[in-house]
Image (cartoon, rainbow, N blue to C red):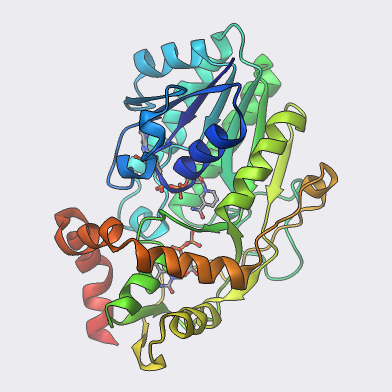
Length: 340
Ligand code: NAD
Ligand code: TYD
């Protein structure tokens, strides 16, 4: 059996990856290490929690005692755990530095001493390239992160590379574009706008709505990671982009169409500070390994809307009775919506 450690496996992409791995890799035994921050939810692992090939450990990646012993047992580490929301990073970056940078360092130190680790996947992001006025980012492009989340991820990305270059840790780094799909915490734009639309609440569109993101279905992301795990080359970086560049205002109209809600719900609010205008990835390198996205954006978005419509019991408690979320929402949107 291959022993796989998944950090952040109770979050959005991590939990989708755990389900994908258990379903497609009968020879994998998966351990999820997750702190269960506001974004980590055990219900994301429903089904996996009863699987004899999966175990869950609640713990912090910055805790060397826990991380060290789990990394030591692993053949493969897939490191998703991070603070992930740009707007929260703008309010305060301390947890981003602690988890995304220092936590990654703790895992890498353990990986350096591990005896049979064959791959350490560092989950990075397209945000490390910064805003892309034209063309598409290639893996060799300069990193120019422009917000504290992106900067902390860039730190982790290069730290992982340094542990390959210096100590020979078998690191591959993946830089994915914006993911969407089931179980994404409703602070990110797609689940926030879907659930606000369901409730006939305003959709707070930042700035002129012309910012562009490249949308990647979470299952296409999982398939790409699988390929990099098996066929990636140590020390290399792989972009993972869906090839679906959409301006936020167009995305918002698509969500309104799919939920049957009026355009009058769109509420233009003051922009996010330092808001990157556009991300775009060149995925030639990954495609050469044999990957291509399988989920079209129109179909993937429709299914995602249907998932949130069918799973109100997943998101309604977060939005309606979770004090942490309500306090975040008031801080992030209260004044913005008043000014609009
Ligand atoms: P998420 O916020 O949904 O989940 C993060 C998970 O990490 C949560 O389960 C949380 O409890 C856990 N976690 C946070 N701090 C921890 C700590 N100190 N110790 C252990 N666990 C901790 O995030 P996501 O959207 O699933 O993103 C997963 C990874 O993918 C992140 O590294 C993120 O930077 C990267 N990424 C995300 C996207 C995207 O569009 N969501 C795109 C590219 C890359
Ligand atoms: P988000 O989901 O936060 O992802 P990221 O910042 O990592 O790209 O935001 C996606 C885009 O949607 C981004 O351009 C900001 C915009 N956005 C809004 O217009 N309104 C919102 O309420 C949110 C959360 C995001």
